[in-house]
Image (cartoon, rainbow, N blue to C red; front, top):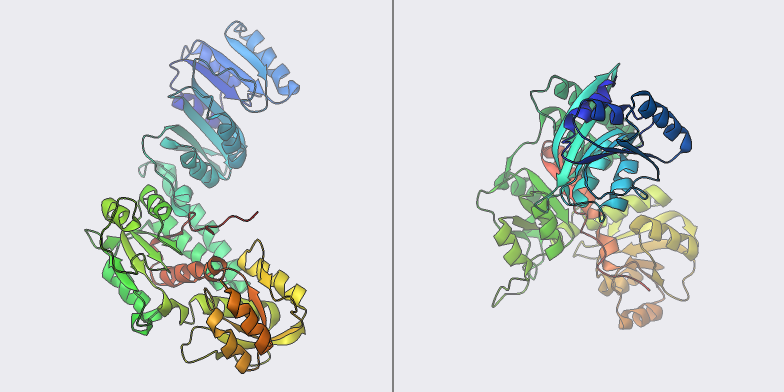
Length: 478
């Protein structure tokens, strides 16, 4: 009576209590659960009356009206969950399924098993399940015609595990299952096709990312020695170029000096360490050093304490990244050229090589330039000089580069872009006749994480490299 997808859902149901079938349609699953004796009661719900009418005819046909409750409900909103042991949600998109669970997770009884069959976006569903405090305890593939579908069983997690982007795509299939290789090969080919299209569009970093995802999908994750990672990054971002006051390098080691999952973050906060631990990352690579000033003691609230406790290494790359063509300022340089075009070759602001001067192909208004900067950096707002006029020759430095504004003005710039501009620098710039645009320290440096991911994935495509979800602006704006 059941097709292959619903039969797999049936197989994954525990049936220790009431089963709730969300989006029941014809109530075929509900009928089979009762008729087989797997459970004694089913709640069959749907958002529309039409499917419920079809379900009603099915339960009447099999004379099980006293054992199947039909409920009109948007998801689980109107469904009584007392005594429910299993919730089946099949035949919907992965995002929709996740939204239904998120809306009901607080009222669901402890120990509920979620049996889920997404038609699309299974990777989004897998990731959100873990964000909702669930874990996947079983996943099976089914083939219907030329299409492959996944059926997931999830239960309350006893840990704070999270999935990386790749893990959410890879799934939790038994490697011995005949369809597993077929599924992952198809996904690999799909990701490689995306990579090819991105490459044709000139998006090298995104292309490399999808190519690496495709490679891992077909061949799995690889383990790389910490020394290999450090040596490769040193070849692109030479540690010898860091400023004397800086503290870049491998500041915290792990016990085995290898990594297979790497988290990239602008800063190593307690939240970043918790995310790394949840995603089983072996290494965090950050821009700002987690150890900067000498410490007289390390408290339990110190990220260094948490790194050591979780056995996670920390590699920090600060001013050496600021000076690299594939670093913080290099990322801004390429994005400005893509948006505006340059009328001359870029030059360094000064001998420190921590910022550039560029001339736009055509002048733009300060309003249009500010709008472009907001889009580039994802800023909620930008502070700008009150008298900012036409923008043509620009100096810029990521992070707190306000001290370079005078250097930019001395070289004929009409505009300087940076973050964390202090009060006196605004007046100094006004006196020098240069307009300032303060886009925030975090926002002017955050794009470098994608650059570092590109550098790593080009060299180590089977290394799982994740940009931290916890790497966000630490400020809120009212």
